[in-house]
Image (cartoon, rainbow, N blue to C red):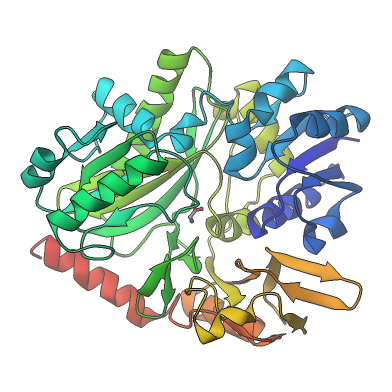
Length: 442
Ligand code: GLY
């Protein structure tokens, strides 16, 4: 029997835990979590609470439980070098080492890598460590994106039109970013529609998984502040209706070239998930950023559809033999809706901000799947934290049926919570299709 270590405590990791537990090989799951996720705990042989910076605690837990391999869910432990620490005690992992995790943890590293190896997909960009030359470069761009160099939990990117209006404001924001961050990346803004392409990589072979579209904005109609992601959908053909086949092929080819460039640049094979955030534009697919892990919520869309034994997928990633494994996903639609505290993403003085830490009740979610994220399970019940609380996923033959299952599931959660009703609706998807038609002049 195999003992598997899972590091992470969110809904993404709950979906990973479920994929591990589903294996016909009956593995035993050992989970290291910074906060107790009741869903992961219920699937685990043993859990250990602890900090993702405490590498000795993670390796100690792994040694004590004779772990075959580890799956690392979030970016923080990757950034802290957990994969390197596990390798030192002979335990392999699905997840890149600290140097390769720069794919996500350093936006300048990735932009420079793509540029150095002449890989398509980059915007016009420059990395600045001081304000020298920033103004001239801002003046050369039509639309502007500003990125602090480092982990920002998906909320650090500032986009002209959304977060600021003028070049003068951009200049001030760059000064501000450079106070907290070693560098700021100034980029050209693309017009288009975003899609998430999560690829499995063993260092040589890159395998695409069903495409997903996440929804960052807090409120229906893509309004309000950016969040970690309010929900996502995928379609039975594993594509997106606003994409051309060439957009998908380009995203995959960019990822293949980046995997090869990472090997050349660092001498180490990238073993884990390369999650490309792409945007379809009138000139094809462009790269917004990479994450070195599954997406959250996107993992909840694809992992439940995985027909191939996830344990075998992990072993082939670790052994560098992904080219020998047929990886299959059910041809079904999925809709994931995140239930969040009413005050999630709102300023602390907003009247709804007090919804955090409130008690919630979870009833019968019917045909939907439920993945716990940031909830606090106490003796007298379940409490919200200030983050996303529960992912509810509907899976069906059509998008509409999947959405209705998710909607039913959402209604089973009672308390001061909110979610986005429009995710997975035909109306929102038609908006994406119309937008792409307009920018392609079709
Ligand atoms: N879906 C956004 C993220 O996982 O970073």
